[in-house]
Image (cartoon, rainbow, N blue to C red; front, top):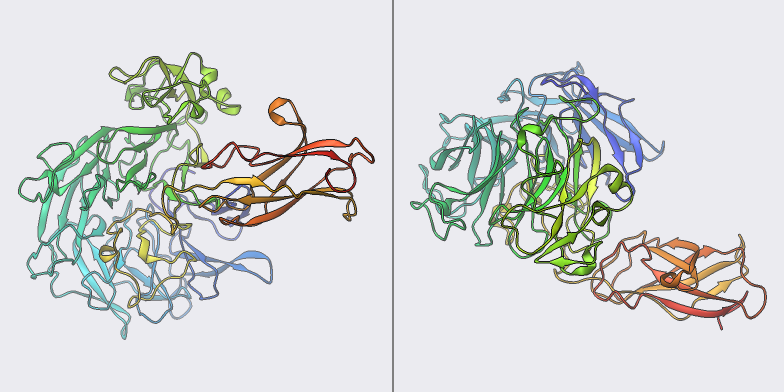
Length: 636
């Protein structure tokens, strides 16, 4: 779509299958939306299925609902006044809606910055409307002062929802006076401020006009303001424990740097140690390129379950994953974006009990064939990311070359850095690593001959990333604002994120319920048969089991081969599991085989669960089961 800060009619909501990326529906034919605005998802009509709410083209909001009877998506409502007339407020078209149960009655409300609509799209209150007319702001709603009522927390004040009158009331402890900005909420320590706040009441992180500050709910600044290294406006802040010390840190993107701030890096506020040894409030800062908006968001997740969160951030040129304590780039992949407030999200989108990264790219503001120009960033040899030393490895099996040295895959040619289409696109190339990289030999560097556009989902090739929730429902996401099934919790029943062990974070996803460090172990049982009486013709039948400690999502590939595939055996047919394979359980799979021998000596069939190598297992060498002398009967 064209660039712009108003709600231009160029946005289309698309729904894709999380496992296959196949489009299930596009909603643009029902209602165009603002192309630069993220959606919000939640069950607002209490039908047990989440709805989608978006900024409507030309202003206001629109909600989409799936109609079971029609088997299709429909428009649930467009925002309107109580008399039924359209309410198409404009401005702030880069932001997106938020969903929360303000009345504490079990029925959610929907917000466009501070403007509130009920679950049917009827305007309730527009007295608080502070959005930047160009870029907008996200509504952060929580029971921040722990009085049992919902508050709207902003950089310039705190407003309490009065349920009987359906209006915002300025909190008496919030005199205002601070500049507005993009906000996050977390507990950074005992800061009484001007209201003698109890220890445990959260503070407010505010990014405003290129500066970062932390303040109490009454507006008393306790950290900063600190200028963003590299300048720029600054994007929506993340909060998480980046260094594993039990105290949260703050991540913010700017025009020329991504930076992490830590109160422990301010000697007057330190209760622990600054990981980098700095004393200016900044743990680390890494160069980036965001000359278009310099307001991009980012996300945080502890991929390795080691207590130290990694940062996931996409600038105009690359998607990167940064080490939390040091800022070292652990992963890089080319992209292109004109950038708005967009951020990558982390969730288990394919149901495989491992986290994935989802990000959208575009050629907006750049060449129609290559995207944004990144030559000014200082690309390395072969147009590579200068911040990324190369693809990582735990052992030789992680590398196409079979060589892992000092934690990096080593290579002698580009062909040892890519598979299939990756090679055609030149995504990774074999080049000398940056000076100071440990080990010997060239590494596989992320290259950017051109940008990319469209939606992309990334997973760990070895499946070492831990499990995550299956939801990230809105830009102003924190774990306790939404249940995993899309239910919006009542204010009085919602867990307080800053009080929950292992949370106290913002725009950060968390691990699922499974323990870390476990993995599945796939095997085939030795009681397979050939079903000659199957209605559609003979079918090979096998029992596939999981003897490990982690589930495997539905859709696991199971190959049936004529002979050992490792010795040149050919594929007879392939089946996929139709349900989750829990630890200690087995599931039957079937696939048709029209050419089954009718008489001895028969054929030798090898059954290989996960024959495509998609699942990382605790034991990789016990998948194969061999059955000899197969005819149209039982295995011999």
